[in-house]
Each structure stands twice: as C-alpha cells, then as structure tokens.
Length: 418
Image (cartoon, rainbow, N blue to C red; front, side):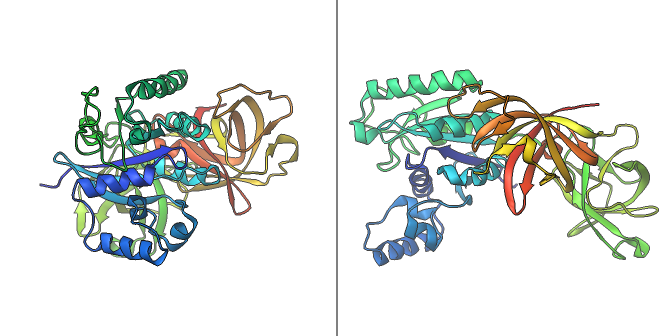
C-alpha cells in the first residue's frame, strides 16, 4: 500500500535557519539520499568551509557561492507515519514571489523564528502570506535556542510577540516548539537541554496534521491545458488537463466556458490507463469529446452546474514588483493569468491598502500599491473569464498579474461582480 505524502513549506525571516532545519530533518530521520552528504562535504571543502546542514538544500552552485537560498526547492523526508515533500521557501524580500509559488502547493507550514533575534519583518510578512493562501495547519519552530542557553523566559517572550501578531491575522498554531536545528534539539528527537518543555518534537507535531483530501465533493471544474489533434478514439482530438475539483464521468455532458458550448465525454484516458469510467479531482487526464474540441483556456463544468463567468471581480493582491502600481498609469500593461486562462486586465479601484508586515492600513487616495503591500482591488478584463472564490476552488481563484516579463502580483479572487 502506498504511503501517504504531505507537502510542507518552511517560511520565515532570512537567516533564521530554514535550510538548517531541513538539513536536520533529513539527517535525523535517515532520509538523506545516498551520496548527498559526500557531495555537500566536497562543496564545503572547495570553499574552505565547514560542513553545514543548510548546504543540503542550497544545492545550486550559485546559491552556495552567495550563501542564500534563491529558489523554491523540494526534497523529501519520512516519519513513521507518512512521507513529507518539503518545499523550502526563500526568506529574502526580493524572493517573495518564489515563496508564494512554493507555499501555494503546501498543505502544512513550519513558520520558523529565531529566539535570538525575535519576530522580524519577514517573519510577519511570511505569516501574512500563509494566511492569505489559506494554509491552516501551522507549526511554529522557535529556533536557535542554543544561542540563548535554552532559556525558557527568552522562548516565552518571543512566543508572546509571535502570538500577538498571529492572533491579529487569524492564525492559530497547532504546536509551538523550541528547537535548535543546529544541535538537533526537539526536531526529530527530544532534547535533554530543555526539561521545561514537555510538548512534541517538530516531527511529532507534523504527524498529527491531516492530509487535505482532493475536493471530490465539489462541482466538476476541468481547465483545458491543450488539445492533441487526431490522438483520440477514431482519430478525434484529445483534450488534456487536470481535474481541479469534482468527478468527471464517461458519458457526462459538459459545458465549456466562457463560450458555453455543451459536449459529451466519449472517453477518459490517462497514461497507462485507458477507457476510464471516471476521473477525480487531482488527476491529469485526456478526454475525447463529441463535436468540435474544446480550446486551451476553457473550463469544463457540468451542464447544469457551471462556474461563474465575468469580466469584473474583486480580489486581494500582494504587489511584488519594485515598480509601484499606479491606477492612472496602467495603459493596459497588466496580463491576468488564472489556471490556463490569459487576458489583458486593468485594476480599476483599490478598496483597501495595507502594509503586509505591520498590518497598518494605508491611504488609497493616490491609487497606488508599493512593493510587498496588500490591496483589496477591483479588476476588469476586456473579455469574459471563468472564476471561483479562492476558498471554493483554489485553481480558479488563484492568479498572477504579469507586466512585461515580470510577475507583478499574486492574487486571490474574493468576489465576482456583476
């Protein structure tokens, strides 16, 4: 029987020990790939440095030379209960867009904070992003306890500061663990240095979290990724994509939005599996339809339970570009990308504006959003797009705004407007 796998993201301020904690998790759960330690030791020797656990994740040469994680990377470790896919999210301000990409794939979070430095700007900003992305299973790891001589009062003070901020944004941690990733205290094994702490280790805390089931019970949503001509039954085109929610059944009649054409499902296939009777949320499939094929960017729905189609909606966006958003200067420069959909767009109003680190509400009168600010905005597109609330179907409620070749913002749909 296949073991359960849970995707996990680590977030927090730069230099608070995310990569070191991952290295410790890999080492202390015997999950380090064969030959990886030798590779890391050779890289460290080449730079005249001592072996560091953080090098395990910083596997790119550029990252080692600069001493900073520059991309979202994935690796794996195992516990007695399940397998984990670790997504290491960078902490530097300029790498926040990578962090959003990583965190959007996760089902649980370790928010790491150094007790030697306390809650920092990036700690608060990443915690806010965790909330914005709808991640609810959170462990807070208070790292570097060895640097404060495992002092209980130091831990309590930093924890109180963290809890005050988390309460303001509506996050309730499942477990809060004092750790030393460098020394291995309370990561996979209990520490003898903190007799005052009787809670779980980080690994034990993670094992309590639940695997989030695919949204099978929700209405079917099938964004079309591509169409392969002449590869289906009888030479018909095969429409490929991922079932984001619900269940698709052979023989079912689907309405493909935004156009509204209805087509019957003649066959459902998957690599290594042909003539399937149905496909569920999370499965990537190829579908043969009657009549003309669907097109990339369309979304297949049940004939009597369609998604919302609109050209105007409300959303929360996290502005990522160093060049501010200015409503008066857009000149149709933004492109809206959601699932496989792509449309030009304009932001026509900013309802709220907030500093993501301090949660301070800012004036909206000048119609601007600065880098790392959050805005509740109204967006218009020249043509119809197919959307859902982010909290209903994430793939149809999560989007990016692109300006030129730059991802300028990440966003979540909150409400479709008439």
